[in-house]
Length: 287
Length: 287
Image 1 (tube, rainbow over the protein chains, first blue to last red):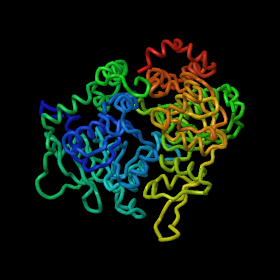
Image 2: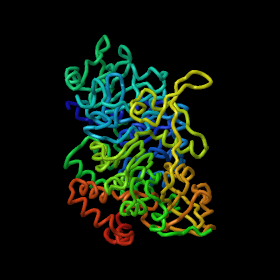
Image 3: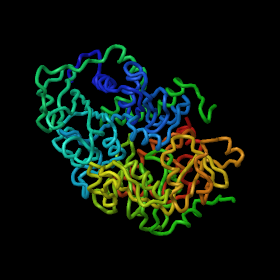
Image 4: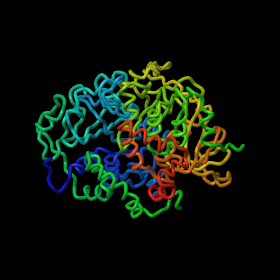
């Protein structure tokens, strides 16, 4: 991917994600990319964000992406504990934001994490809709990211709608829960095209429109006028991301195969040490 | 009342065809010692309710105990998909009902509140509504807004694992609470394993962390490492190395038979010994 050498694609994506967040809302940390985007946004762009250290708890702690230590982070930093009821109440009252990483997203912003093929006899059974139906029926902004923009992930029509997009899916729903933005390794996309279709907002530095078209499963709407370039991360953005993720857990989401397995084991073996070096032992057991 | 009992006592109290709600969340604080005992029992045709399932659901499917699963998600998080769940879904060897995170909570809450259903907007505009025959689209009786009626979920039994409990059945949860309180309140009988039994006097010092109230519990079992291989913050983290072994074993019939022999068809003491004993687990998993 022909990006300028001083920053990496993960940093472009995380910075683009961070710049979407604003206001005084809870931001859940389910993935390394999501938690780093929330952390960067809070430090640079949206100081009132209430960042969580796990999918459901630890408000107002500094997140550190790890494989197993999310709840321990809450504990040592004495983050404010929340309940699942708190989380869903925040979703229903629109005080919650989350970056969702779907397996498929389509031209209307419907998303799928449930299955490939027919639900009743799937070719691949994935995980199940989790809380995406709640997000896509209540939040005034819904955010998606995909790290490998391809014909398999950015498709004309998802195999199963775990999350409601625009178009037909809005018939029984108001605007709440409609898709807001998709960030991929190629660019930033909105859903402001005709009938709520996906539209290009900007392409990352070095990405050509032809490449995006070749890796998108439908005719992508290109707004009139010149195509903007995604503003690259600043030196300060990059420093904050790298400092917050000393184990480089974010890189795992971009890797696969034996290389990923090796990195995975290395992080798992090392993360307690890094964690203790960063946070002295307090919390419920060590206090 | 002293409600202490053994793991086998708990299993003896669960009838065939029972509906069992399991607490925890994917790879966090699952009552795995109880689940393993259930997996090696001769119980048949169980219905399992989970909000966010992981190795619990997967193991029960892998050992053929389950007829029906009600779930919002089943997966191994950073490690990927749940192998037996995936196979059973694809080959339709069990009955699956896809719910969502809030609707499972709402279904349990309906039982607690003694109402037949709870209304929500969640799942409108998604295919969950199309494939889940339990949900019904309704109109607001006061206005005309479309809503979804989520039926009550009434478990016969809840199985949960907590950090500490007293002999009367009060339970302390120190990390994220997940949906354990809802499971405990909704079930006709709640059985709780714990890392350690404390005196009631010691337990009361935990204040609001005493989340499971004795009026809801029927039995308490002291089972150190009772959530292993899932994590039990802040006592120990998730054993990702063991879960990797599990995933590898599940790839072949031979591998799975060996796994069952070593880690399922053994009592809890032997299970820990087969991991190299508690000292070995401490060095790998204490934080």
